[in-house]
Length: 459
Ligand SMILES: Cc1cc2nc3c(=O)[nH]c(=O)nc-3n(C[C@H](O)[C@H](O)[C@H](O)COP(=O)(O)OP(=O)(O)OC[C@H]3O[C@@H](n4cnc5c(N)ncnc54)[C@H](O)[C@@H]3O)c2cc1C
Image (tube, rainbow, N blue to C red; front, side):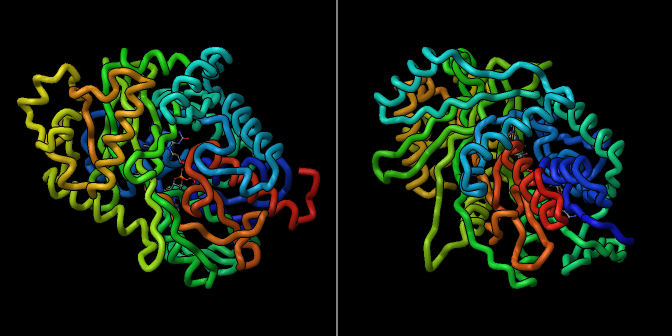
């Protein structure tokens, strides 16, 4: 088979790249994904909380990519989920990209409402946070919702097909060479340009491919922590100001960076699978609500020589947690963690917060996490309690582990082209982004790089 551009991965990076190329050129575009079509993607985790390990994982793979079965929260800032300014070298262009991505989602019927707070409320919260040594980062956000996102992606996919993009679903790319890729059925695809956007699920594979091609690559930081669950009324006042409030904290003892991430108002905690280990995540739906709000509370871990492999470090913590939990996530009340004792079902039942994920093992997070990370979490929550009273109450629930692995960062130029001519990379799998909007923006940057090489300027 032959094509002008082969795009590997139909996540936000791949889909936005395909759109940009289809709208601005006559290039023949092939968009390949190893996962399922959008309507066939079913993740038992999001329905029952239990992962039955489909292959490839429906949560992470398929048309729309990893965020498709999630809350679909669009963070409308270039410095959240990566930093587009670092890639574009232009604050103006990075904001333009964010607006452009948002407009496309709205065109495909994302909900109209954007969560912003009026200035006074934001200022009040920022002031309160600052008084406790916390930085509050206000972000305009569009919440598509777990039940709406697949519909938006379906509209997007239909439009790509109308615009002439060819889709190849349930085919895995096994090998990348200059001007050629190979599929798992043994067939070869010859192409002028390759854009690899395989997301987090394809990050290890992409790293292996680029190493073989002698493209340089380096380890990035990871985030290790817990999913915190509190009664919704505790978080309501800050959620009124920002739907997914981001607080940045430095811990007292170690001066480590700790942050809140991915808040799900009246949402559910869900189990997540990382290769052979178990973790947690959270989601929120427009149609179904719980009495609780959950958010990730994460400690940034950056390793320097002689051991730089943050992924191996995170995986070993995930493995210990999975062993301790007997294959299920650990659940502990904050009060028990503070007392350095394990939680039991009996103690959890006495708590006034009812867990939304029950396929868990009550246990002791301090036996799975390094003391430094536990200290960061305890100190961070205590500080946050000054801004969000009740968040560090003894009945607060902590699920572990929540680990955010980021891909190794592939060395690219400003067009996101690698040292191999006409091989471009984009999205989370290349270590260039960490969210739907930023991944989509990197897809656009790479597509514009291809257009420039084709002599199509003014993009
Ligand atoms: C549960 C969950 C919830 C999330 N919620 C949010 C959220 O609310 N807001 C937000 O901003 N971000 C969220 N994210 C993160 C967001 O989904 C990702 O940052 C984003 O999807 C990355 O886009 P991407 O295009 O780089 O890769 P992905 O979306 O991961 O897409 C990559 C695609 O490539 C395919 N692929 C991989 N390898 C191959 C191969 N060898 N051959 C063919 N195909 C391949 C995969 O099947 C996949 O479909 C969430 C992630 C998860 C897992």
